[in-house]
Length: 134
Image (cartoon, rainbow, N blue to C red; front, side, top):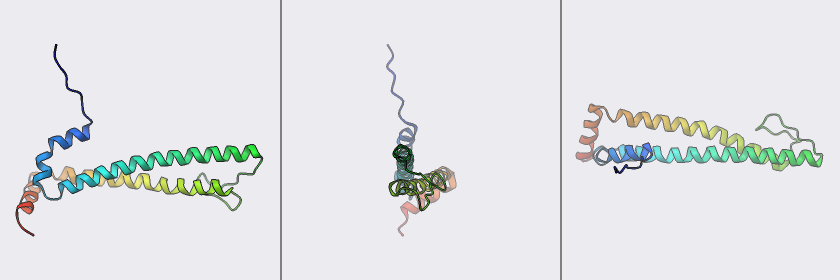
């Protein structure tokens, strides 16, 4: 019976195959680490945005059940008449909604930079920069 290896996540597999590039090319490892950190932060920001939305929904429903008026300008913009706890979560939601696309964009930019490092000329420059003293 043939034994099959489990497929690893693509990012981990790419990291394993690019081990020598991390060691040889100056700057590649730090950009790779920044890209990984940006991806983790983006996932966390996305989860937090979802959590904020859930909290806003629950608080609005609770206020409605109490008979309170829930007055908002937008899903993330409170008015002077918005209950304070709901307004707090709306502001948090607005911040997270800006953070998610910003982190996604940063991840795309870092990925583009890493792809450029596979070009022969860039690889040679990175190795020379690693070997020559500053």
